[in-house]
Length: 207
Ligand code: NHR
Ligand code: GAR
Picture (cartoon, protein in one colour):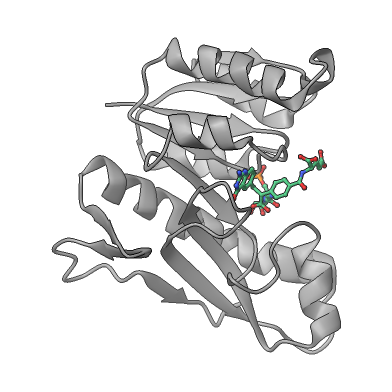
């Protein structure tokens, strides 16, 4: 009943999952330089690195990644700041047990550089979304969202800092729901069984 976490960088979402006591059996990065690897190792979590540049084709990388994940037999695969688009074959292999956290209120601002684009668009609410991963980038069923205000004078850095605090709130909650077997997807809509106290949304009107 474990999870494998895929990272590319800092690993603060990975850390939030560990801090929540969730059963992380391995952390895998596509970049040997990812800071999160050292964080995981310091907590005795097994780590591995598969440099995507070592693979000629995207499908070759994805096949090697799947083989590495499967060594740990996880119930759920969690993308936490993982920056490689995954092929349809990879997504199909983990259908219904692969989740991502995206730094925007989807379906707005799919893709990269979300905070800059949100500021340029002048939106007044921004946030993050945990979603099941499907072959279409950032379009899978939505598990939970957190909204934060966009404040006058915000920069990419101040806005990103406000959003990531909420990422660390909603991602552990979503993963725990999954492991408790409480998530159901019906016609693309995710519902949580028996969540009298925990909502599928967060508003955070704070610094
Ligand atoms: N794969 C699929 N099939 N579907 C999704 O929804 C995915 C996915 C892989 C990653 C995370 C994601 C995000 O939350 C994610 C969702 C990377 C890129 C990207 O363009 C886009 C979205 C996301 C992650 N990556 C470039 C690539 O060529 C590389 C960029 C880089 O290395 O810095 O893969 O936004
Ligand atoms: C997070 O903000 C996450 O939502 C975002 O990258 C950051 C990773 O931080 N993910 C993406 O942009 C995916 N394309 P972390 O490494 O500290 O968790």
